[in-house]
Length: 279
Image 1 (cartoon, helix red, strand yellow):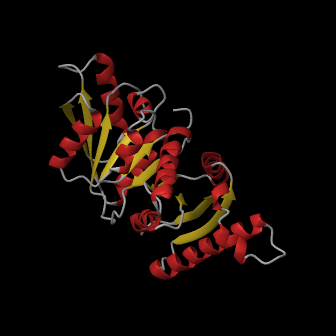
Image 2 (cartoon, rainbow, N blue to C red):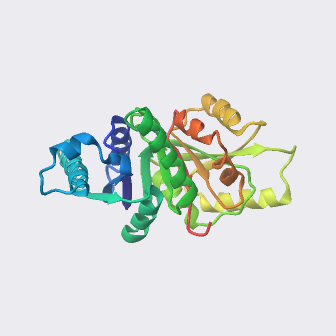
Image 3 (cartoon, rainbow, N blue to C red):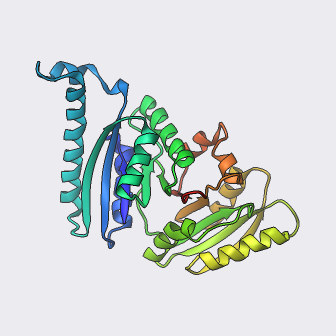
């Protein structure tokens, strides 16, 4: 297992990192601590503290690399898990482009990140980067709410509108996470008609085959996705919400809505967004 852990060195980013490390406590995992610099990272303190022989770029990248190495050593001491290997990666690039390069180069299986950064500006940037990763990468993304403490994943809510077919590849990460704690999956279908159509029944049959752990199907009605899911999940005791972001599907349209970033910011449970190449 190879997991990419974006960090801006904020407390919320550390919560997401802690969540990932604890989630895979008993698994052999390579974790990639990954920091992407922006032009605004050229802050005065770094420049002023740089030696005369340093360029501005060298000064700022050294600060990032030092912080990554410090985080790596802290995690090794804190968790002392021989099954876990931590790598550090600093890049100066477009956030999504850098992520896609990492996914391809290191064969990343999962990205785990927070919805927010260190301050108001970082919150806006880090939150928008989370959404861009969901929209523009072919890798599953797990979004961890602000200050969320890990608890074992025993119950998973997978929501679907049955408007797109699925592949086995897309469900690899859901099945992997479900097997960690023998979780049960509740497939929640957002109903628009009184009964399921033939195509919807076909999708339901696909899901029945592809989900490898105990699961059941539930139908709920509602006009607003967020309100409907929120109200339903409040009645249950889920540990993880899961959706599949497929081309031309309801969720692809949903993740392109102007208000979805705010909804991500207001998450109260971790969200796993499934994605596979060409899906």
